[in-house]
Length: 95
Image (cartoon, rainbow, N blue to C red; front, side, top):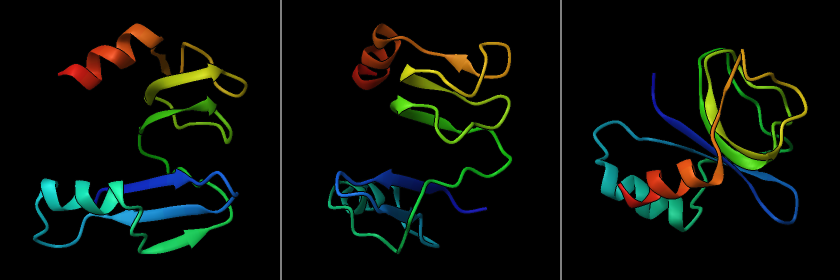
């Protein structure tokens, strides 16, 4: 399974980027920073596998076993998803 990143843009649509066959992480990061999308969608669509997320809220709901940071958790409980706080997010960015 290829790694997929979905980024909701300020104007509404979602940019979908997938790690290409043989693409190294540095090249993928460059594409991600430029939001060079492989496709666009009208909304974020999590699959069934756990994900890492960061956002204003957990809309749509997240798969069990996911972890991430949100200002408001509306659809998932701490028993289903590991809620990270701002300190955890800052630590992850430093490491």
